[in-house]
Length: 137
Image (cartoon, rainbow, N blue to C red; front, top):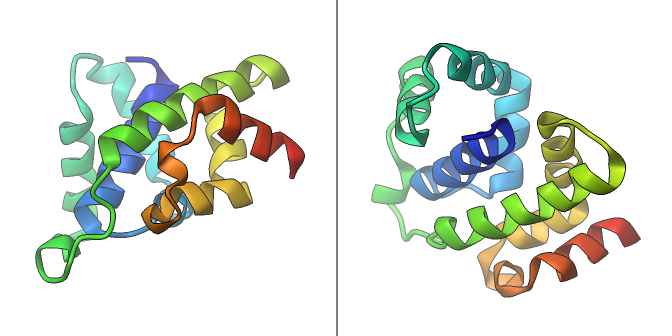
């Protein structure tokens, strides 16, 4: 799994587990240094999936899933992950960025907030539509 896919997968999966918008999860991971930890850990454990990395994050934060105590609002993590991975790849190619820089560009965009809010239905849009919205910002 490349770094881009790993980061997007972890962020979107954590969003689903914790019932938190993924753009907020990314900002939190960034601020807490979890992105660097995930990327660095991948070098030592390249065969591990996102469950392993989420376990590390949870182990560090001692959090329990909020999604179990209230109605889950972020249930389409798989759809968002595939969409965001494609959009980030497009951003990466166009702007000649590395995986993490492209993830930052996506998750720091206003459009990421709309995709994270499942009530908007943006997670159903095509990767090209989301890419175009980010480019227009």
